Amino acid sequence: MIGRCSGWRWTMSPGAVAAVLGLALALLWALLEPEWGAVTRAGLVFVVLVLVLVLRWVLQLLFSPLELLRDPDVGYIPEDGRSRAQTARYVRRRRKTGELPPVYPNGWFRLLDSHMLHTGRVRSVSALGEQLAVFRGHDGSVYALDAYCPHLGANVAVGGQVIGNCIECPFHGWRFRGNDGKCVKIPYSNKVPEFAKLRSWPCCEVNQQILVWFHCDGEEPQWAVPEQQEISSGEWVYRGRTEHFISAHIQEIPENAADVAHLAYLHTPSITSGADLRFTNRRTWKFLRHDWKAQWEPEPGPNHHCSQMLIKHTLTVFGRRISLLDVEVLARQVGPGIVFLLFNHRFLGRGVILHCVTPLEPLLQCVTHTMFYQKNVLPLVPKFLLRAESIQFERDVMIWNNKKYISKPLLVKEDCAVQKHRRWFSQFYSENSPRLRFQHDSLDF
Ligand code: FES
Ligand SMILES: [Fe+2]
Image (cartoon, rainbow, N blue to C red; front, side):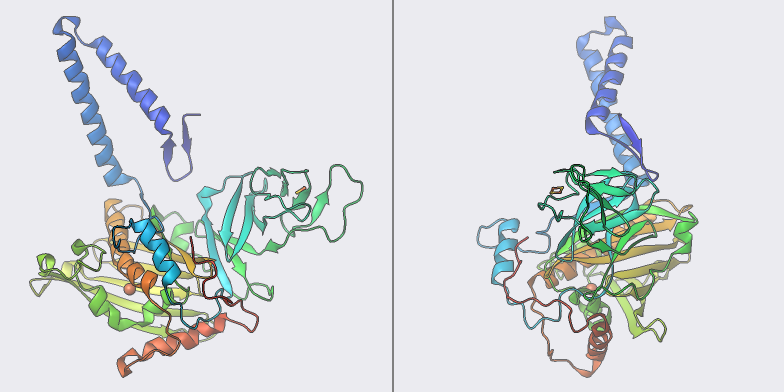
């Protein structure tokens, strides 16, 4: 198969693209007048090839979704002749972690985007210190089970087959039911032990994402992930995603919303100054600045698991405000792992970035930003907004990757929302929430 339509985009393998392009160019060569000579014909074919590549690049820039999947060493400054990846490993090993809260809060966490899991397919996914087998049964539903088979420990997500709504282990063929993880068949035995099962995780599929519920005591979901109606109706469509790996405790990331003071410092330099904090305050782009006004508040019951932050952004050039670029963003956090960043602009339209934090290990978070935007707005607009967001976000990443968690921070009156946020976030921990026992557990990526 040379191409595939995933519902969002048409994809072709690089080999297939090269083959089609090669054939087209060979055809062009054959059609050109033979008396023009080989050099002229080769020159013309070359010019056409360059034009096709430039056109493809322009079309991609204008219309295809942004895919920015960052390496885990983003947010580190190479030092003493080491590469960035070496520095990242070294910094993680030597960093002080501080007195940490529990490492896995209770709540919903994103595992995959819906398009990444086709019917009858299984994916191996790391989350919350576990290995999961996430598969889509032939009924279209998504199931998440512990990946290691209780028989002799094979990973059922690696080579396992989806049969109906069950997953079959690749080692000896034991078959496990998706909805409760129970073993329903052992191909060489008449009897299936009652206790033969894989732990099953509650999961849901909302806003074109697959999410899993974690509770340290195995309690059932205590709230639902809100559906963004415009995504379900197709009014807002997929315009791209970014992925970052952050070496920090999960709580540091949402706490950023309540830390209003950092906006006026870390995020004021223009995005043209980039994300490397050594250079963001250089003079070159000083005439261009972002101004922010923000306020964070928890929501009252029954939505006490939610909080809101209204962000007002303005851009100033030589101190003059460009009101056309005023953007209002409502950041609504739902539980410990999901934030809806809702954009509303007079001319640029409306949309949402789904900001999801999933702990992979105690101090390693996978953060994705997935953009859905009004279908009738040129894709370049949401792509630009997502790119701008990722530059600002990577400034935070550099801070998080290198900082220590301070359990008793030295705050001034204006920082009061930080403590308020910590109290709010503590609702996601319970007595048995897992804690990091050794300071240097699992710090290597
Ligand atoms: S290890 Fe899975 S069936 Fe044997
Ligand atoms: Fe920030």
